[in-house]
Image (cartoon, rainbow, N blue to C red; front, side):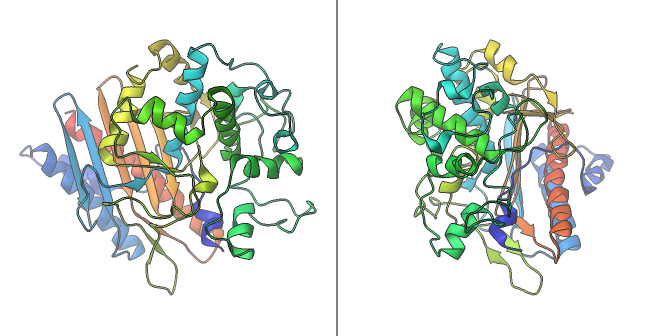
Length: 405
C-alpha cells in the first residue's frame, strides 16, 4: 500500500479508542500540580504506544488552557515542544474554510442555501454532478454527495490513466512529479470532468475534501483573492496568528523552524521521517501549518465570537447532525464531543491531532501524536489509525478533566 494513498485521509471521530493509562492519575491521594499531572498523562500515552507498537521516535504533545492558566507538555518529542513549534494541522484547516464561508455569509455576499453553481465559474472544471442542487450548507456538512478526489480511488470504469488510483498519487509517483503544484481547478476538475459523485446531495454524510475545495473556490470567486491570501488577511493577521500560514506551492515541502518531526513505521523498515510533504493537494482542507499556541488561540477566538464571526453565526456552525460511524456528529465545519466541546480533528502523514474548545468550562485542549504505523494490510492499518485518532480524543478529555477538577 502506498503511503500517500492512506495517510492523507482525515477524520473527525467519536470519543472512543484505545484504553489510556490516564486513569492512573486519578488514583493519587495527594493532588499534584496540573503541569505534573499533564506530563504524567503524556508519558502514559506514549508508553502505551511504545508497548503496543514498538515506536521509539515521535511522541505526544498536550496543550490545555482555561481561565486559570495554560500548560504545554510533551513526551518523547525531541527537541522539546515549544509554543511556537510548527506542525501540520491537517483537517483542522477546515475550520478556517468554514469560517471564511460564514464570514462571507455574514457580510451578505453569499447564501448557504442556493446552488453552488450560483458562485462557481461556468467551466468544465466545475461542472460537478448535481452542481445545480448542492448547496454550500451541504458542502459544510459533508452532505453534498461530492466525490472525494484526495481520499477515494478513481473508479476503474473511468477512461483515464489514473483510473484505479488516487489522482495525486498518479501525478506525484507515476508521473514522477513529487513537487507538482496542484490547483483547486485541477482537483475539482478530476471529479467534474469524469462525472464522479458519491450520491445525490442531502442523501447521506460522506466526508469530502473536494467539497471543501469547492468552497475555497467560492471564497476566491467572491473575495477576488486566493484562498491563502483571504484567510491570511481575514484571520491570521487580525488575530495575531503570526506563526500560522497556508501552504499552496508544491515545492514548499518544508515547515518553518522550529517544527515537530513526525515518523512513520512500516513493518521491516526503520522509522521514516514524514515532516516534509507536498501540501498543495490539500489547500483549504488540510494544508495549513500552525503551532500549539496559535491554533489554540484560533479555536477559542472563533468559538467565542472574537474572530470576526458573530455568535449568532457560530451557533449555526455548532448545530450538529449525526454523521457516520467514524465521524460521530458534524455541523458546519465543526464536530463535537461531550466533555471537550467543539472543534476538529486532523490527520496527515503521522500528525494525528484533536483540537477542541469547551464553552462550558472555557477550556481549550490540543492533543497531537507525531507517529503512525502502517501494518501489512489496509484493514489493520486503518484499525491502528482509528485507535490512535480515538486515543488523541481520549487524551484531550483526560487533560481537560485534570485541569478542571
